[in-house]
Length: 173
Image 1 (tube, rainbow, N blue to C red):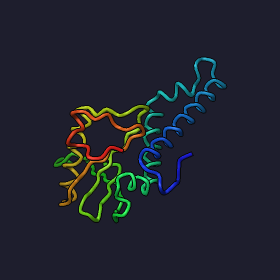
Image 2 (cartoon, one colour):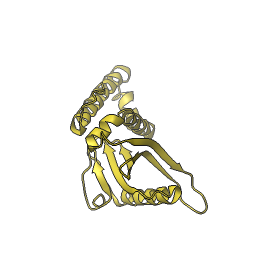
Image 3 (cartoon, helix red, strand yellow):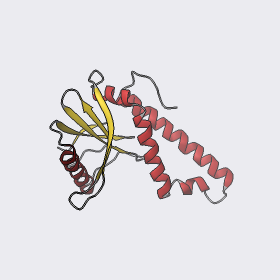
Image 4 (cartoon, rainbow, N blue to C red):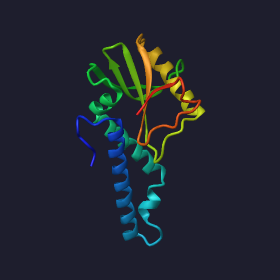
């Protein structure tokens, strides 16, 4: 049920994803009622760490298959980009880092993406902000990039801006 329209913007994409999430939750609830008289095995599984990890992984994959829509929502659909991920293993000299998506743009900007799946607007905390700062430092030191680095937070229900996101998250999709 994920939209494949090439003209969908951020709000449309968020609405389509929200509809998908609600439909999946309804199916899971129905399955739970059919197979378990004690509140539903699927309801219990959906609260497990394994399910949460799977949800995050599935969300990231949905996002990665919709790069054209993400670029359109960012207002950069006409800018040439190269998409990749970034992973740096811990070493004795430097901490490691993993960045979900890196968009290296022809206009001398590199967008670093953090993708978060939550069932409500994401509210950044100090640990999250510190993590993004550390990832940026590792990325810059590892790649030697001289372009402007810009964080993009991509979530299912948006972000609730606060003191931890201001001046750090440049784009909230």
